[in-house]
Length: 235
Image 1: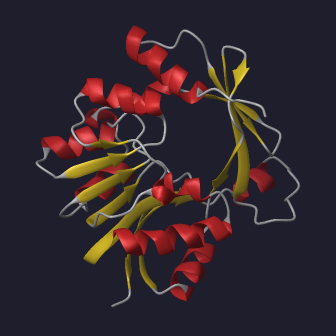
Image 2: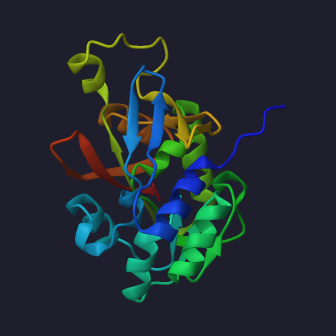
Image 3: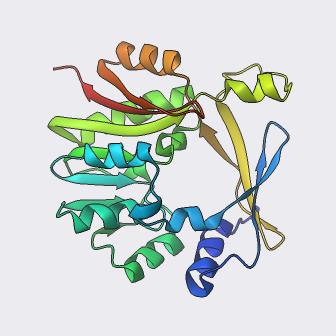
């Protein structure tokens, strides 16, 4: 059995220690491209949050669970605003960095294995619902989210319509849903575990949400086909 390293966590740790990117974090994609992922984006403070994220954060209410928190930039902002916020992150290295950065309530666990708590807001910024991986995974994410929400709970996240990739770069669309991507990080010559990531176009999102009993509001769209969503289960 091949053991993969948490190269994403290693890149975060190096940046946290040196406050600069000494080596690139490379992202391999299933559509044939290879990108450099700027690690500094995970360490942004409020001055560098885009408008979409500010709107999402301003909609947080009650007790918040920040899912896929990375190194905790959004949670630190919410803490400063007086919110009761728990952070959920699967990377142990990222959790250790958050602890050093002052994040107070850290849960190092997989989202789907986390239970027993109730929240008024589930927050998945920076396309956090991408952890669903595929359409079936997104349905599973919505079902599990209902178990974690209070009666007045809400789900706040952003996603992107990546249809432009196939049009602008003349890439052949796959047989499966075009927003289902496979990624793999590489850092200092070491590759991490391949993982699936999901991007949803608005029509697909709304269709699935309605089928599963959710009310959907599209709150903001930017010029890069990225959009912000607020959802709550139908009462």
